[in-house]
Every structure is written in structure tokens, then in C-alpha cells.
Image (cartoon, rainbow over all chains, first blue to last red; front, side):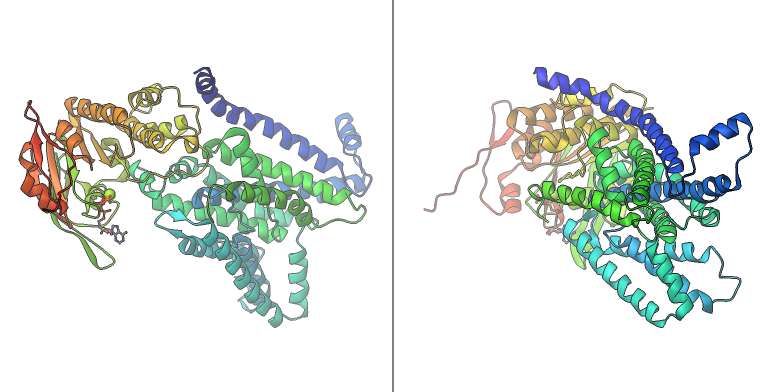
Length: 352
Length: 259
Ligand SMILES: Nc1ncnc2c1ncn2[C@@H]1O[C@H](COP(=O)(O)OP(=O)(O)OP(=O)(O)O)[C@@H](O)[C@H]1O
Ligand SMILES: [Mg+2]
């Protein structure tokens, strides 16, 4: 009896804890931003520069270049990619009612990659008006959107998604997109090949204000759309039929969820080449800490995803300095064990 | 009033409902009974719009198919036969989802009242997935209750459409839930419940509709429907109905012994 009372009292805690987490994670993101601006291969000191700014001393040209042209866009790009991937993961998981959905694992990133490579290789054949800085992210978005829609059609029957079908369909999608990308690369000329390789290497190292100008608005729009889906995704957890009975516009929620996840993944993949596991680790940790309610989960995932990617980026910069480790390696080392852990814990409960 | 006229449902080319006429009055509990696979759940799904059907569907005098999902959610709650839930939500969180679906969203104490009504007081902080089957079923019922808590709103009845609400409950909780449904009906609301327990149906329902092979074979007051002939033909086995001294029909399971 005492135990149930205690648990009953703990109920409002989970809601207020999720709201407190907004603040904590916001603070964490601010710290991660400072870290990202302060750490780098050149010995430029953020604090020195801030001190100069405060006292009115002009910055040296080197300081300006390093802080403003290199580190600042890189920091903002990491925020976009991290927040985008984490929210995309949370949305896909809500849509598939499955904590193992991650854009990198279920083939959404591969679809975006196929779109990006198509843009690089086939873009040259398009009339000049159509090719521009927008072509690659747009193609990545369309690839991600197609992959998500296809995955949903294949893996979900009568509102239930089988884990096995989803993961296997993800493997098939990834393989298919890989094969088509391979075909395109085979067709590509030397200059396009260089572009493709450069894009595939991804990482945030090539961050520029121009890249940011393309990725940031799309990511922001996707995030704003995603945070309105919280209640709908909660309803979907009860199954599509029950969500409909509760008055939720199920088809619209699903379409918007696919759109938001595809836009966020597409933008992230277009600028960073696809970074796996952020989308799975971040929502999972948050669900453990504050529960599965999507309304606080989605904004929290954006905050934590951005922080995580900033920290991973700093690690990738310092661990083998002055060289850089591709950031995908860092996130995979952090993320793959978490993925296995979820899989192992669920094995007893759900037969795949 | 809830009225379905000449409802036909085909799934994958197979006729499941073949012209079903069904009506339920507000202020009453209406039970739908019949053997497995007779189309009870399908009828309920046709009424809620979950499966496509042809024929007339009316709730409180309005065409169900023309209503928006959120308008319907404000006047009727639906309990599916097999409820599912992904992610480790707490019981209180599940019940609150029902609260937000209805029109009583401002009443923050409603989830607790709904949980208490189904005998789950103190369960709000428990993880839904760690409840027993019967407890989960009652938690889902609490969610549905939360959605349409007041049986009457602005003189309009609200409806509980329940697919086997007491199927996996112990006898004590079966009575708790059936009494709850009675009170809801007496408060002016309408209750439609798919049932397997004929005795409970006879005890608590005002009307019973009997289905077999996608058709309605009988409907009326329990005393009219619960006859040896109707039940034996419907269920395909020999059944004998008895009358309690108070006039209530009841059925004791018995096996026909071959002579
Ligand atoms: N999605 C479907 N696809 C194919 N057939 C279906 C489908 N849903 C129901 N049926 C068939 O329709 C018939 C009626 O099913 P329904 O679920 O309505 O039965 P029921 O009366 O609710 O049975 P129970 O008492 O077992 O719940 C069954 O023969 C079933 O096989
Ligand atoms: Mg049924």
C-alpha cells in the first residue's frame, strides 16, 4: 500500500521533471556551444577574443577568421544536424511505435544519400535555373521522404509495425539505395566523382555559412512541425484505431510525421553525409529519464541531440589532433552499444 | 439514439456483415451477443468508422460518416477488443490521453476519478505494461470513460461503445464495470457493449441483439431474446434457459449427455 502511494505521488513528478529537463538541457546546449567555439586546431582563444570584444580592442584577422568563418558556422551546423537527427529519430519511433527506428538504420538516411548523389551526378544535366545550392538538399529530402513512405507502406500493417519487418525493410532499402548510388557513381565523370567523395566524407569540417543558409531553415521548419506532433504521436502509441477514436486526424499526423522526419534527415544528410545512432540514443535516454510522453520529448530531443553532436564534434577534433576523426565514427562508438542494449532488453519481451 | 440500417461490410471480397439493422437508445445498456466470428466486433467497427461499410449510420440524429473525428470523439468513446500500447507509459498518462480527447479537458481530477471508478485507485503512477491483463483492460476503460465522462452534455447523450469490456475481468470487477455502465445509462448516456456472458447481459442490459454469421438473428429485451430456440440455433448447441424467482433469465452450462 505504502509503495503504491509513493508511486502515485511520483506521477506529477514525471511531467514536471520533463519540463525541468527543458532548462537543464538548454543549459547543457549553451555549454556545448561554448566548448565548440573554444576548442579547435588553431590555438585561437575564445576567451581572449571575448575579452577583447568586451574591452573594445579590435580582433586580429586570424581570430576573426577562426571564430567567425570556421568555428561559428560549424557550431551552428552541428546544432542543426544533431537536433534534426534526434528529432527525426523520435518522430520515426513514434510513427513506427518502435524505439529502434533511427533514420540511419531504417534506410531513411540511405534514401537521402541516394537523393544527394543523384543531385550531384544528374544535376549537371538539368537546366541551369534548376541547379543551385538548393538542389542537393532538396534531392536529399525527396530521397528521405520516398524512403520513409516506402518503409511505412512495407513495415506497417493495420497500424502495427513489426520490428523484424521494419529492420529488414531498412536493410533492403539501404542496399537498394546503395546499389543505385553505385550505379550513379559508375556513371559519374571525374569532377562529379570528386564532389560525391567529398560529400560522402561528410563530417562537419566543411561547414560554411552558405551550407548553413540551406540547412538551417529546413531543419528549423522540420523541428517546428515536429513539436506540434507530440499529442498525435502519443495517440498513435495506442494504435491507429484508438487514436482515431480519440478524435486525432490519424492520416494527417502520419503524413506530417513522415514529412518532418524526412525534411530533418534530408537536411542533415545533405550537409553532413549521414550520421547514425544520434536518432536512437537521444530519444532513448530521454525516455528513460522523463518518460515516453512525446510533447516534452520532442523539444528535449532537439536540445540533447544538438549538444551530443557538438560534443562528438569536439571529440572528433581533439582526439587525433591536428587531424580529425570523422564524426560518424564517434557517434557510432557511442551509439551502437546503446542500440544493442535496447535490442537485448527487448528480446525477452517481444519476439522479433 | 444510435442507429445502423442495412450495414454491409466486405473485407477482401468476403462478406462479413450482410445487412445488419441495429439500434440502441440512450438511457439504456444494449448488449450485442453471438458466437465467435459472428461479426460483433465488425459491427462495432462499422459504427465507429474503423472499417468501411455501406448502409445508414446515425448517432444522435446526425450522419456518423459526415462527422469529423474530433466531433465524434466529443460524443462517443470506443473501447477496442484488443487494446495495444507501445512505449512505457504510466497508467495515469494513458488515462489522461482520453481526457484530452474529450471536452472535459479542464477537469484535472477526472483521471483519478475514472481510475477509481474501475477499481484502479492508486495505479496512476504504475507502468501500464507491468499491469495484469485485466488491469490493463480496466485502465483502457478508464481512458475511454475520461473521454466521455458526463453521460449528458447540453441535453445530448454521449455514448460508450465497448467491445468485450469485461472479457478478462474477475467476477467482482465484472460486476463493478457492469454497474458502472448501468449508472452511465441511467444518467442519460447510451451504452453499447459486446458481451459473451449471457447471464451478465441478461442482468444488466435493457436490450440484447443476437448475431450469427454476419446477421442479426434476434433483438429485444433479455427475456424475449433469451429463449432455448434462439440461443440453441445461434450457438449451435443445445442450451436451456432457466428463470430465477425474480423473473430473470439465466443459463447454467450443461452438457447434453448422449442417450
Ligand atoms: N480484417 C479482416 N480480414 C479478414 N476477415 C476478417 C477481418 N476482420 C474480421 N474478419 C472476419 O469477419 C468475421 C467476424 O469477425 P468479428 O471480429 O466481427 O467477430 P466477433 O463476433 O467479434 O468474434 P469474437 O467473439 O471472436 O470477438 C470473422 O469470420 C473474421 O474472420
Ligand atoms: Mg470481437
